[in-house]
Image 1 (cartoon, protein in one colour):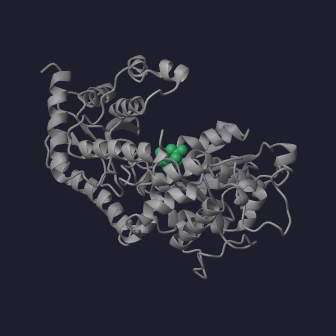
Image 2 (tube, rainbow, N blue to C red; image 1 turned 30 degrees about the horizontal axis):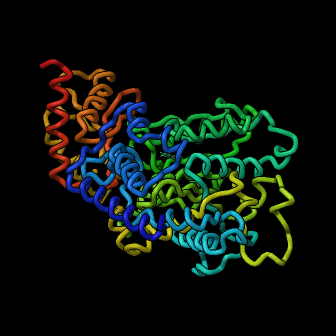
Image 3 (cartoon, rainbow, N blue to C red; image 1 turned 45 degrees about the vertical axis):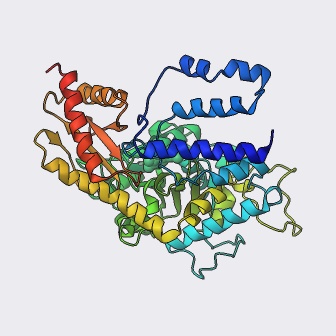
Length: 479
Ligand SMILES: Cc1ncc(COP(=O)(O)O)c(C=O)c1O
């Protein structure tokens, strides 16, 4: 079997697949049960005998692709996962072939370099790279720093571990003290609360700050809650900001929250998993004003920057916070000597081995250049604003807020305002195989939810979605 021939043929199959999706010649998603898929893929046979002929490989791939969610389809408006550039998988092909993880420099000098470079690029976007030297790869106390990791959830955990080391340096050896709390928006991503349980503080150590009707943190309540906690002898480990909130795509008041933290010497953590990418836009970057006041930032490149999942940055204002976070050392990998040529991220990451994440982000940007990425982000945000305007003109649709990002919640209330009706409508709709959207609850009301991350989605598709919702709701309501 020739590698060159197979890769070339796989490239051809993939191109046909994405082109068909783009032209809407495939369903957006056609879910069938896993037993059917397993049988069609002949998983048992191939596991036992291996592929005997190249044709078997090609047939396997074609069947596999048929049973995927078609993110390139213009009707894909689902989760916070983008339709990548057609060449978006190239870094994974290379990484998968040479298998150079980027946690130890010596195991992947190119991958580690790309990671260090992309972190410097991100630091610059935040406004923290004072000398603008993207080729300065040295970690230094007092200098900002960061590393890439597998996803926003691990990244939030990593940042909270660092915040714990800052407020309670003894915790690593002696365990947690019981007076620690974390404060943040009631609508913080679930990975924040999960992290607190994993860290051993327990879910209840999260003290939610009330939110307004659109689930944005109500800044006016922050001071009183903080003073009350202090009077009870509690120590606030950090304040968490949504930038933006997962459900609504709306940003917490970062600037004011950052000032509050600086004044009260509280660690400020910005969960920018979804929204930090607006820093790349020349027009929408103001949405995230105040991010520069953070002590730690989480930024998913695999949400709004066309990077195939996963690739997340955990970023610290001061390298010492990154340095002090994890204190376990393994003698086979952590050598503190001047023979090391490059930089290792392994001492700072939860993972021991990790893939060459920096190359994924680099490729996503380098395929078309940074400016086009900024315009793509603007386009996606523009789609949600446009959809909002269209919905306002529709009689039986309700949309609770003006969108700030590429996420919008709305509901169709002609037949019912019940939460279950909206949820069932979403399932029925996606099982029509024509559109893929999601759903979420906001202040206990269930909405349909769209996330725009496909450049081929146009105004006409938004109007078609409205028609599809009306038609589907009618059937659901038996009207
Ligand atoms: C605000 C926020 N934080 C964290 C996460 C978790 O990120 P990931 O899915 O990369 O683990 C998400 C994902 O939707 C998010 O929206």
